[in-house]
Amino acid sequence: MMPRLETIKEQIRHKGDDRAVDAVRIDGTVIIVTGTFFRRAEIKDAWSVDLHDPEELIRTLKHSSLRVDLLTFAQRLPETRPKHDYFLTWDNIAAIPISTFQHWWESQITQEARNKVRKAKKSGVDVRLCDFNADLMTGIFQICNETPIRQGKPYWHYGKDLATLTRVHETFLDRALFLGAYYRDELIGFIKLVDAGPFTRTFHVLSKIRYRDKAPTNALIAEAVRVCAERGSPHLVYGQYDYGKTGSRGLTAFKRDNGFQRILLPRYHVPLTTKGLVVVKLHLHQEIAQVLPEVLVRQLSSLRNAWYVRRLSSRASDR
Image 1 (spheres, rainbow, N blue to C red):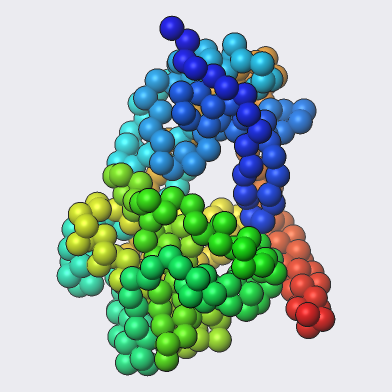
Image 2 (cartoon, helix red, strand yellow):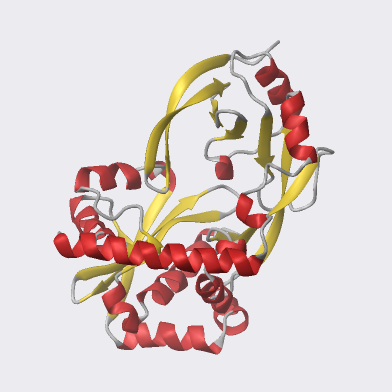
């Protein structure tokens, strides 16, 4: 019996780009399809979905009305060994294996990270659980609109109004919690944590730049580890560990200092058409930056980021 398939238009958000894309809902799982000449399908919110029977999904997509050239999906923690025979590459994630808070504090982080957590406490930074309400969202709104540039790139939530930001942050509330870092009753940083079953995932980790000297982000990570240890979550996941040729080395160093490890997960690429097969054979499914020399990519990124800073800083001054 074929799974129940429903063609829909699904609204997705990716780095500030809100757009409707083709999608199908298959027995409750949403598969989004992007691209024009080359059509790629992937599971929406794949971090929370275990794909137990990829062959059934492949058959369903082939028989659907959508034109799909390639299906891509990845395994989730703790499944790090490949389980399927499809062509694969490797995703990397930043994760802290968690047993107890004490073990993390004594054995998994650097002395510099410990000093920053202590500094935050001595500076008067208080980290606590927050209810998702208007007061929290007002504080988040102020943090998001502090600066248009973060890590040398445009920050995609800068300039959004309170209602829009509330819609962004109210996802997965049935399994999410918020930690807030306060200084003199002002919210200066926050983390949204979402229970993904075998791990806990950070959705947002953000602090005010003007309070960077008080190390609120380090204090937030420490409290996130404490919460995960108390709740028995075996891993805390914070995005990627290595962002490749275009990524921030500073962010990777921050994660390393705070006990995050680089963990590799298999990502599969399954051609569904002849075009999809050619794309995989020629490795055209990769981002263009990953096939160019790193020196060139870094130079181009520096020029792009400098342009962003000039353009967006000018806009911020006008505002």
